[in-house]
Length: 267
Image (cartoon, rainbow, N blue to C red; front, side, top):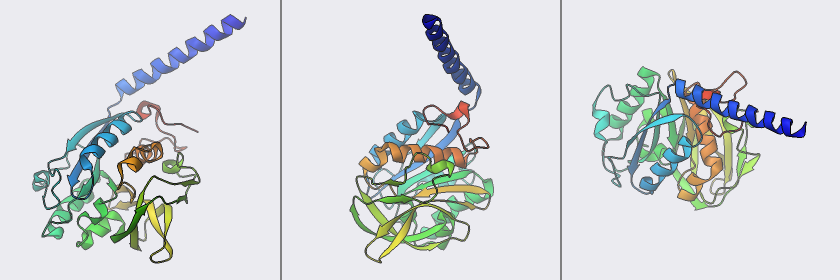
């Protein structure tokens, strides 16, 4: 009887894995554009960490734009096309284009693309400061930040443990390094998911959040300065869940749809 039980269990697992694989094969992957590059950070390494890390966790297909390379004063030519966002379900912004002479022009092309199409966005770390002279950029982000505090290990506090994005985060998380962004303003529609204490102004600053820019869902984090933080499983799990939330790939209980889930835990 014991052997029969083991065989039955093994067969169940085989059928479960096979069924999940068939469901994923039948589902179109999330079509993601990763726009990255610029100054101040190792975006070349991070693009690989992010693409490979999310591909291990969710059913996603990548287009990676690293045209900027390590140039902080370069405007990616992709954004010169008014239809640049067509064909994507989500755009992940992880760039540092802070030295452009005109922040308003590029900010408008990017933000308007999301607002007019409703295509979801993820914004990571230096993206907030990329075009920080533009008011529209801050509206698109959902929060306003123009400067940061020192880069060192810091404890982040989970403010929304029941939110589907934050289920792998734990009560707190202390990345290897946090270049803490000081947040000047939080939009009225922003849902704050996590924060961190900053000693310069003796207050806590938003580190994870969601909001909508028009109809476009936006998930953001100020974490991501250091490659060790980006490669941390907590960062990648939370990022993957943020992508699923933004693209509507969660069930009514906030769990990843099976056909889009490769390794994330479900309740």
